[in-house]
Image 1: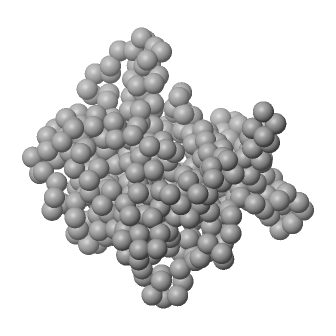
Image 2: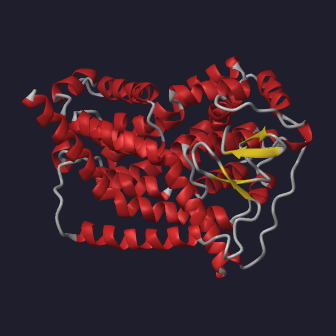
Image 3: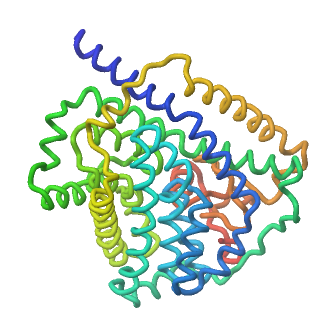
Length: 417
């Protein structure tokens, strides 16, 4: 029992150490994401994603990268874009970029795994988006896509809440940005907590020999290929998505996974089992299975290709150079200073968030009652009804959880988004 308690304690401390190393980066990333969401119009996003020309794909990737989301919200927004006229491939590229090409992901990877991983996340993410844009329209069933659009189309296009020019120069505008920041952190709190806890146990409690038994080594290309294919499978069964899977990726790297295998695992945050069920609801079983195959293949291919590219350039990290991810101790150092500054910024943002009504902010927005995400009522992920009042959600996933505990009445088609 003493050994068990010691292992549990060291595992939790290891996970807490990883959180402390990345706290300032998380706050910075979410603050920047909140500002982008508050000041960049989604209507404009939808207008430019109507085809799959190279320029459109590049635009979809850029807009996704500056519209950071959790995996559930990214899937819901991609569904909404598709239902309102965005080309299917462009919508999926947007979804991939909004979870894999975001600043907070890169910063957290840098802190936990090193600059090579942060750079590889960017390079591999771009490569994955390019592969997706090439492969997806050539292998998917066009009839299934058309059927999915008919299923999702409600014949209604809501007018977006008008955003006055220069909102970024007002306290009300920054209060809305702060609300997005707080909402996104609230939305991801469980994913982040689970990710750091699992990573601590994976790093301390799971013997290195176990990870090494999963990841084949010593067979050149075949080892790298096996690692890249196994990475997404671990993501499917781990249920940890978005930034929450980076600490676990650090533990996998400490356990002996190849560089490409770790990258493929990080890229695979969009094929966890709950998300696959959501894709099935959105697009149908046939299209969901096709998406799983294409997503898995592109994630593994991007991880493997980035691995070999970095080896050729002499940039690939070694396990000896990065060591074990969560072993940094607490103490007064540069990380502590950055964390304290970030916490002060967070307190200021939270103050703006709590004062948004007094500052005249919050008009046209609602709060998802399940995950806490701030939702644009003109473009929500899903809508239900409580009595005569609409209830807005970031995704169908949250709406289903809410409706399981409430007697709800579907809104008329003219009010669904």
